[in-house]
Image (tube, rainbow, N blue to C red):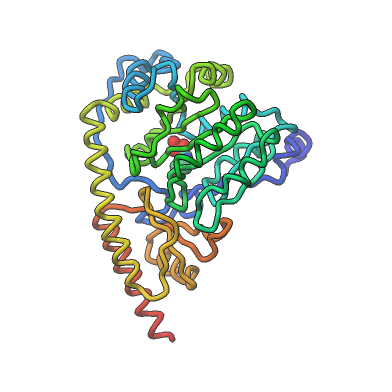
Amino acid sequence: MAKIVESLLLENLKSLKPYESARRLFSGGRVFLNANESPFANDFELDSSKFNRYPDCQPPAVIQSYAEYAGVQQNQVLNTRGADEGIELLIRAFCQPGRDRILICPPTYGMYAISAETCNVGVEKAPLNDDFSLDVDEVCRFKGKVNLVFICSPNNPTGTSVNATEIQRVVEHFADSALVVVDEAYIEFDPDTSWSQSINQYENLVVLRTLSKAFALAGLRCGFTLANQDIIQALFKVIAPYPVPEPVAQIAAQALSKKGVAKMREQVSFLEEQKQRFKDALTAFPGIELVGDDKANFILFRLAQKQELMDYLVEKGVLIRDQSKQLGLNNCLRITLGSEQENSLLLALIASFFEQQELIA
Ligand SMILES: *Cc1c(COP(=O)(O)O)cnc(C)c1O
């Protein structure tokens, strides 16, 4: 490390490793089934006539259509650079560096802890139960010790949705001491379990959303934080002046039009069919055990030879994600559902992997 960097870099950042995004781990592959992206690349139109101007801080057409889509008021919506920026803004606005802490429930999405660590905010853990349900008693033990409680539902990477009464207990328990952030990045795959409309009822409830998954726009970097007006106003204090680029606003507005939402729903039903087909095929292989639930666009499974399978697939240019370092997920791999062709290719490769294994054995 250069001397000047060594002497100026924040202490809490020195030991930190940059986020290993699925993309960063493997850039040489051809078939990407490792980042829970959608296989659909939809068409959009761009009007460049305003590209010389700074964009709206919050694009009105996007805010209006997202509010309508989520069933909330426009002043309860904040548009951010992906849900990831929402996570970071919450931490920066509500946690004092070097003093405050957040609570996460592993195994879960990695960015809560990473954002906290980069902000020098502590991370407490209340692990999920063995069946990946929320350990509500354990979560509640942290009252007064944390400022934010992150609950991912449907959860990445277990595909499990958190029971409504359990979330309610947590939100009520922390009513006067912490914000409870329900991350609904995959809610379109389990729409009846959304908490978006409950932000009217609970002052400490925040819901995170994104266009990266079901809406097939991971490349756009467009997410939403839903909460009561006071929380949204607090987040405006820390957000960048022009967080949503004009082309992003234009594309998001089209994705959230009536037609856009209808297309998203069609694509979700397609993925649901693929999921069923894929699960049926996977369970037929010896030694593969499905893990968790299927309330999202991915499948998690356990296999003793997970490393051999990963290596085999990488060699063939197909990338899935190793989740085995996560708490309770030893030997687990996660497959994002892709196009029919991609899914068939992956299943064929898994079949030939097992044939090869038998020959070796
Ligand atoms: C993908 C994902 C996000 C990030 O969404 P972006 O809008 O792409 O930043 C947030 N939470 C969970 C649980 C995710 O899986």
